[in-house]
Image 1 (tube, rainbow, N blue to C red):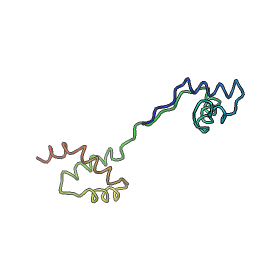
Image 2: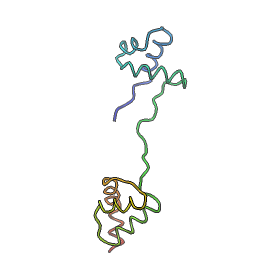
Image 3: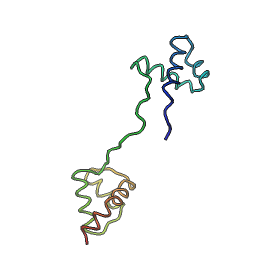
Image 4: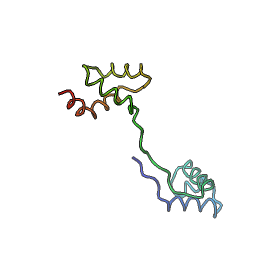
Length: 118
């Protein structure tokens, strides 16, 4: 994943635009960043007063949780299944997920599913 530019570089670009009166494009060329980046930094500073980078990435909530999680564990324990079949069964229950999501769920829950079946 990409790292954010340093706060020092952000301050130099914003300072060149604000204090020195340089255009955003000229400041971008001078400091070796994209013009859109300089525009974004100056806009961010004028709106928030900060040049600190925002959050990159983050936690993504699982789509199969709560009652659907419990149902799917019981369903996998109850009888044989195919992943595409589980995708269709979840869709009937109002949970639209991809094949990959179901695969990851079954893979992560395989020890629970096997332990309780034995």
